[in-house]
Image (cartoon, rainbow, N blue to C red; front, side, top):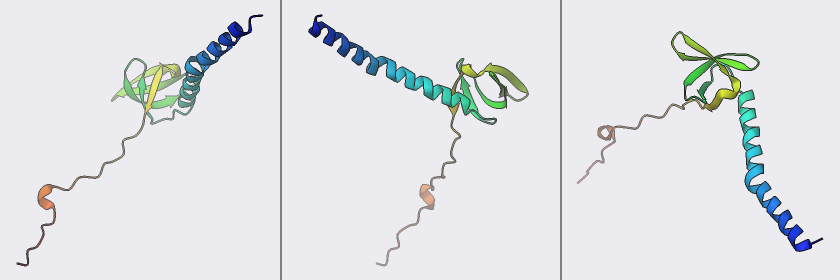
Length: 105
């Protein structure tokens, strides 16, 4: 058997494993974990680009409110992302309300 050719084949397979296969499996695991942790009240983005709020969970699908009194049934696999809740930002002080330095001179 030609050992240099075999060694090159092993190295090439290892390279493909670390560059293509391993990251893809990691993304699949993260996507499955995200879909399994979706809860009622979560803001989601569907694969079709529709934003909504989860109102009901079922086995293979979820009910998503996309507008007041408008709910659609969406396959769990069609949920592209869970939108994290916005944290309230602290209001910035207005420039006029900043304390003025006192002059003693």
